[in-house]
Amino acid sequence: SSAGVLDVSSMAARRRTAWSVLLRTGKPADGWVSRHCTRPLSRPVSFVLRWMGLTANHASLLTLLVGFATAALALTPGYLPLVGTGVLFQLTSVLDGVDGEMARATLGESESGALLDTIVDQLTYISCFVGVTIGWVREGAGLSGLLWTAAITLAMVLSLMRGWRFVTTHAPNSSFVFIDRSVRRAARDSGLAALKAAAAMFTLLRRDAFATMFFFIALTGRRALIPAICGLGVVLANVTLTRYRRELAAAAVALQRPAPSVGGSPPRQG
Image 1 (spheres, rainbow, N blue to C red):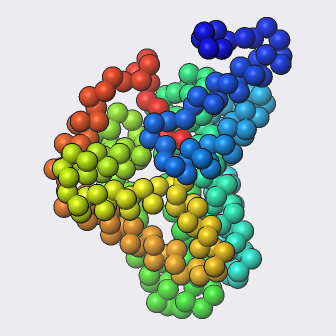
Image 2: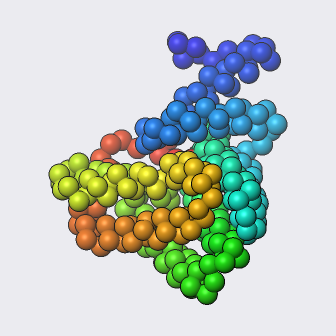
């Protein structure tokens, strides 16, 4: 209630209270897509899973299973499998927010949970990328497409390792969202036009926005656009982390100044 008292006097009251709590599990770092598109879909899923007695870790594993199913479908050449991949990848984006919502709603945030969420994110990203690009090769991209796939996959893995190093060095938890926040803070503090442009691109490459872009690309049937965008994203990330490492380090320090979350528990990424 508005007075801060949760009504648990009946089953119906407990359901209303649980829903009310879930409505308050958004994050200040949520982008426009998360606030207006993803959260309205993920909260009902969180509500149902909680009433089934499942935990945030169960939600993370569900996301991983759907991500692997998405990658498996992406292996199949053709327009309809690509559209189905776009739909399932959008679903993984929705499910990605569920574990964090459940953890925050039950005060069950933990470093291990945040780490599991991050690992699931990266595994689904890489597996779906590999699936899409192998499907592209099977559609006739040939040896050049296969080499392109291998090169970008390796670059993605190395970039994720570099991002992990930045996160473990500067962030209060294992969430890769901290990199995006650091870029935006560095752009604001430095006033550099190039960093502002990079911050805008980083926003487009966030899970929620990228999933939406992926879906609309899938509708066009132009599978080759996915590796092209991922390749550009890898280049952008590495150029930004290299060229503006001092600005990003300063921004990371500045982001630590606000008081930590209640109890000092690290928030889940979702």
